[in-house]
Length: 263
Image (cartoon, rainbow, N blue to C red):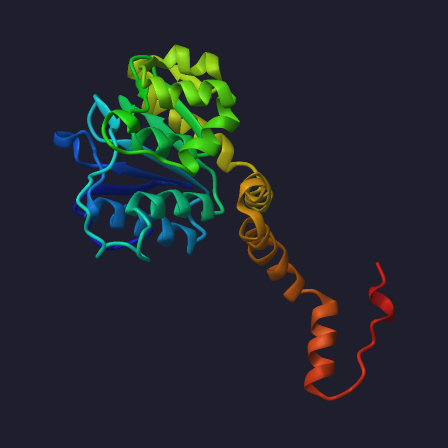
């Protein structure tokens, strides 16, 4: 397991190389509250630090709700830094994770739950799933991941319509817009999600991490580029003959022999 801690608001299990994180508050639409945000973030961070899991699936408990958003409680105590909503910490954790993340949408994906699936690398949904952004209707908005990433998926005009009009989209409509990747019969969602995850898990983990880093760097600025270089390139450089020669020469106060490292 990625973490031996017994979570209160989520479930986590591993099936071979696939980790499955389930939002487990079906009585409340699998909504985020303070504790849920903290537990989801901590779970993803622990997955980032281990090598067993090659693909992460995020889904919701029950058969009605994927996630219907966040809980506006105004409590700053659960935040990593003042002014940052707790849900933002989840989106950042998903982006930092060097492994593909699949949203398996088993019901309503609304508000912050809609942003959650948008931030995931891939989305597979059951036929009866519903997608909706409701921010301006309920006194909320997302001016970062939920807008820029949504624009990447559906285009600027459609992204603005989704945010301004707040209309429901069926899974088939979402698929037609490029908002999601696949629609499957309700009864097949779990099986098809696992098939997708296991197929991806067969790919090279380093190549997948590099690809995800490259996609994220587009919006990440210097931080996105730093994740690619520090997380992917730098560890390999540390293991190279050139790095060993330079380190040894410095430690032993001698001139390094760099003539063989021209290429």
